[in-house]
Image (cartoon, rainbow, N blue to C red):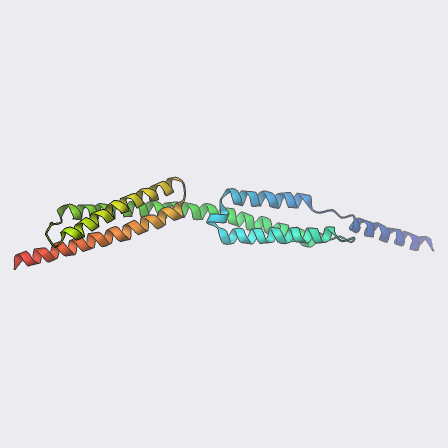
Length: 200
């Protein structure tokens, strides 16, 4: 074998050995894991589930690729690095979206609790002035019971808001608002009907 061929063969063997001894991109793995942790800390699983799912899927795919390359003699972690980069990008999006979505939910639920309280007070005010007659007594008793239950539900909404369970707070507050508004409307209709009958 000529000296030139010997050098080429040696260089080729060195390259093959380098590829075969390639190591998993630990720095990239650690960075991706850190960004995923940040997304979890921002509660992205709750407040940005789609974005978090994209990050988690890329993370799992990257780990699968790393495991596949680890099992090979000729290793190539380029695809794994790409997937880890995607994991970081998606995790950053998830964390950012989670913060924004949670703040919006806080604002919406706070407004809903206030609106529910206003509606409930209107229903209570309507009950106080509603004339009690033989025909209306049973209905008014039922309305009073409903209003008491709604007051309890509204308190639960406030507690959920305080514990940052904004989805539950919003759902409970909207339910109170709808039912209280219905009661107030029915009381007002009854009042107007009675007033019309009195004028005849």
